[in-house]
Length: 233
Image 1 (tube, rainbow, N blue to C red):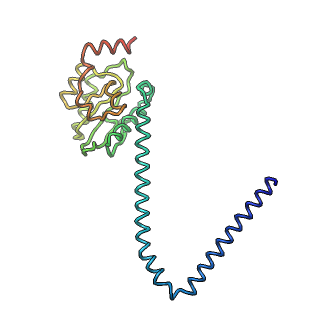
Image 2 (cartoon, helix red, strand yellow):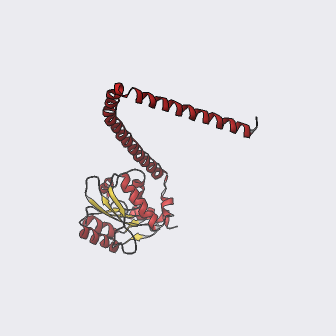
Image 3 (cartoon, rainbow, N blue to C red):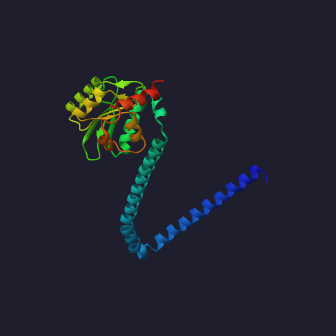
């Protein structure tokens, strides 16, 4: 049989099925009309009882679908985070880095997360609310690993923290902080997330867990020596 012949046969079978369905539906409708006086109590009861049940099933199914999509999104984000290297982060633009920081906040369970960085960001790139409902303000700087964050950059963030009454304020960077800038961060309650801590956050540690190591490592002369050896060749 040719392709055209097989197509015509399939079309005839579909037409026959549609005709049978239409005939069956029409017969059911005729029977309902003939015996309506006898069956209307049963039909009414089925509608009254079945309507709420169908609505409940639909709501349950919708909730399951939404939860499933949300769970899948979180799993995909976790996979992407686990495979994302700091070398890939170094290749990002400033805006892409801000988006990364925002996505890491969402993975931590933060809500109302928004990227607000731009030419007039006034020292804030990402804002949101922590899982305990405290507001958080974040400044992010994607600099080369050989750069150093100076204290004046943290002063700008401190002004935003005071103005917005955020707690905590976070400074995230792909490089390290100078000794004075780390001391400034500790004195004023700023969480200073340097490159090593960013790697931990990127690999699954929560942002708030990094507060336990805030101000550590990069201020040590031994660590600065290793840093220069690794990045300042």
